[in-house]
Image 1 (cartoon, rainbow, N blue to C red):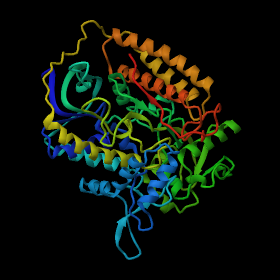
Image 2: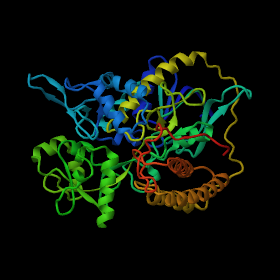
Image 3: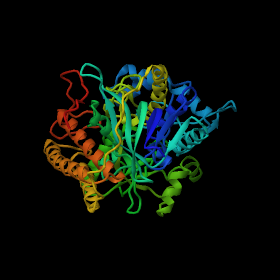
Image 4: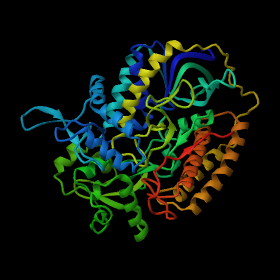
Length: 536
C-alpha cells in the first residue's frame, strides 16, 4: 500500500453526520473516505436511544419547535440557525426513510398508518420520531449498509487522526487544510492522506468525565484537532449531563432514555416519594439541566448514591413494547422495570459547544468543515433540547454537501506533503503513564468541573490540567503514537477548553451552574464564550 493516499473528501467520523454526508456526496463525487477510529458502529449515533425531533403532528408547528429550542438554550441559541434546522426536520426524516431506516409506526383514529411520535423533556408536543428505543442503532446500521454498497465510498475502520495537515501559501492568504496524518491501528503505521476537503464528524468530548453515557470513542478528537490547527471554539462550558444513566456496579455507560419519562416515568427516592415537582412545574419533563441538578441536589443533600426512575405503574405489555432495549438490558442486572424502579445517576452526555461553524458547516480554516456534535452551530445555545442532536447531524450534513459540491471543482492541490517522521521516537515502555493520566483527568473533571461548579474548583482543575498537558506532550514527543496516546493528548486539550470557558462565564446559565454566580446575568445581552487559538 502506498504511504500517501489521495481522496477528494476525507470525512473523519462514522456516525450519523459523517455517513449522511458521505452518502449525499457520493452521488456527484468520485472519491470519498470515511475514517472510523474503531468499528463503524462505535459512534455515539449507534447508541442513541430517544429519536429525532421533527414536526409531523397536526397540532404541532415549526414555531412551537423553534420556541421550545430557544427556551431550552437559555437565550444563547442563534435564532436563524434554529429556524434553519427545525424547518428541515420533516425532509430529513423522509431522507432517512429513503435510506432504509425503519421507524416505529401506529394507526391513527382513521385507521391510517403514521409515524409514532414520542415526547421528551423541553418539548411542548409529541414530535420525536423513533425506532422503538434504539433509534440510533437503526439509523447507523442503515447508513453503514448503504455506504458499504456505494463504490465511491471507502470505509476505513481502526484509523485515528494524528494531526490535520494545513498549508498557507503566503502570510496574506488564509490557512487551508490539505489532508491529515492518520494512524492505522492494524499496522501501527502512520499514513499520509491528502484531501481537497476534510470534514470533522468526530462527535463530542464527554469521556472527559468518569461517568458518561457515551462510547469510549467520545474523546473530543475533532475539537482538539481543529484547535491545534487554528480554529476557534465556543461554549465548551455547556456540557450536558443526562439525568438518568443506569446505576449498577456492573453496568457502564447505559443510558435510560428520556422517552421513558415522556411516557410517564417518575423520579423517586428509595421510599417512593417524588421530588421533581419541588424544582420545576414541568416535573420529569423539565429540560435536562434542571433534572440533572435536581438529582444531584437530592443525592448530595441526603448522602445517597442514586435515585430511582419508576415506570412500573404502566402495563407490562406497554413497557416491553415501547422500551425493549432498556427492558432487556436492565433484566440482565436483575432489574425488572415492569415491577421495580431503575436506579439512576446523572452522567456526561452531550457537548453543546465545539468548533465554531457557519450555516454551511464551514470552520475558520479553508476547506475544513465540522458537522454533528463536534461543531458549535448555534443550535443548542446553553443547553441542547432532547433529540435535536441527530436532527442537527442530518441537516448540516446536507448543508455541507451543498457547499462542498460547489467548491470541489475549484480546488487545486499542488503542494507536497512530507511523510510522517518517527525516526526520533521509540516504542513506549511506560504505558502506565497513559492510563494513569487518562483516569486522573476524568476524575478531577467530574469532581471539579461537573454539574455544580465553583471558581475554586475550576482553578484547581486548571492547575492540574496544565501540569498534565506538559507531561503528556513530553511523552508524545518521545514515543511512537498509539490510539490511546492520541486520545489522551486530545482529552487533555478539551478538558482545558471546558475549564477555560467555564472560568470566563460569570453567571449561571443553562448547563453551566456555579455557586459563585448562582443567578443568570440579565443586566446585559447574553454572549457566547469564544476561545481563540494561541501558540501551542
